[in-house]
Length: 323
Ligand code: 13P
Ligand code: SF4
Image (cartoon, rainbow, N blue to C red):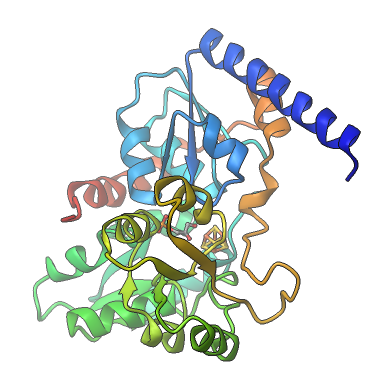
């Protein structure tokens, strides 16, 4: 990139920021962003958080319009909680491999084959799966929710088998797992990770619980995106290898500029040596501007389905994680 191009991109970005800001005020809109969004989107958002924090924000905001800079299941969650508000997703194709790994028809058959189970579903699932669940959880409150269920009550946990196995170990419960996974968190290479740790032996490995068991075994801390950010701030350690989507590094770098943050290497990527979620990265500043300007793509949900998904989601919001 030459100097002229860099200058043009900076001007374009500044102009987009100005336009988004004007529209946000005119429309009484709030911009909510996940930590995996590109830096410019995180910087312009009214609130940046993990899945549970974003759902809480969505549940309490007074704005007329919610622009959800995240993926479809997050925007759907905001709409389930706010049926009268306009909920916009900058790119409607921003899906989720984990959500896709649990198709509703197959899940229905799975539930029918295993009656008498309480169904706990991770928030990273479609509205149809939420509607078939008893309680929704996020990585922040999943352990707490499982521990609140009587010991003799069998539990189905869906859709993430990695998070489910991790929780089974933490809670000592025999969870019946749906066989789903996130392709971003399954892309970490254990061999490259161990080699990297040899290079930086003092670095603490921290991981999101959507990662596979062999990665989690190497970690000195496991938690949601918000918990990982808190950990790097509070830990006396000054070097970290971070096993989750690379977008989280933007906020970490802002919070602990003096510390060394190294993204965990993925199997395929030999160029940037990190893991990015292609769905999260479909949202751009330009699409953010256009969705505010055009009032679309808008999340529309059928009322009967919304009401079925609302109850398990409200259960989720009752469980506030201990910090
Ligand atoms: P949390 O932000 O809740 O940790 O979830 C991570 C994730 O994969 C979101 O898609
Ligand atoms: Fe889904 Fe994984 Fe992307 Fe999160 S990181 S949105 S779980 S594909």
